[in-house]
Length: 367
Image (cartoon, rainbow, N blue to C red; front, side, top):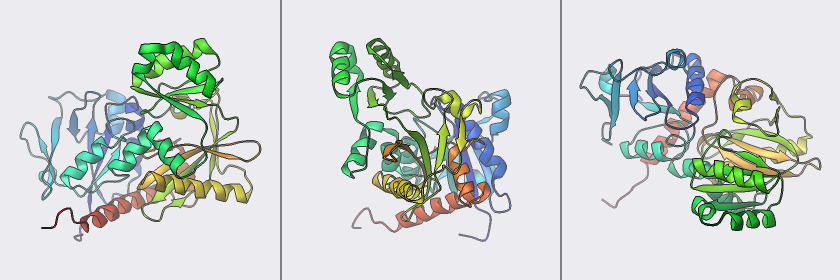
């Protein structure tokens, strides 16, 4: 790299239900990133999916997204030899829209699920986080669990249904769930995060209602048994040789860690580090790294567990673009493990460049 500050584009917002979480994450990163090391640009994506250059997350939080006439609407030019951004109205962008790395802070569909990553790969762009495969596996709870099961990682019992299964015979679906899972159980859209669309069902009527809610958000629904245990999370950082943080414990104010509890800073609390014997901590860290590697994640992930009163560990899920808000578990766990917030951002950027450089060494044709 030349002797100049790399240009990092912070991308936030998006079309998913985690739009506001993304903006808050971006605000924290934007305020903490080391300006002596990086030139920082921003791209905000509104709920319609339109991209705008130079909008600031803090201003979006206070005033909302600007209209197309108040900001530069842009697009990514898919030229693997010289990727850059271009204003749709032809107006100039700083440095002709050129940049060195994208830092996506887009949670949920169309940001965390591999779709954005595929676009960036087509353009030959360095970026922070997992690639197409790791992102898509990390988003789809059904396929994620299939990979975890293949690696013999301990999971709760679960059933996967399609929306069409429910529409064509809800009673048959209810019977299967009652036979294989029982009550209480959790009903989740397979491809959403931050507890959006998730319900806990204690009986048949609640289960039917929960399936209807989940089917609003996804064509695929995962139903899991309830594990009685402590909710534990571990942060992972790295590419080929990842490291795991100390574990943290979620103390939910409700029956489970709802969307509101995660991001409102009201009620639920975090206990960092979680009090465990050293052997349990080691097992959690080892299992977090195995889960990270199982889905071929890169850069960062948060891995969620349950630990029963007998200290049995059950793997719940992995999040390949976890929240970065001021109360988010991912950066707080690394801070407790000795990596301050700004340094964590530095490391993630370095890992993005590292992964890009490694990929440039791969041939995709014989010519």
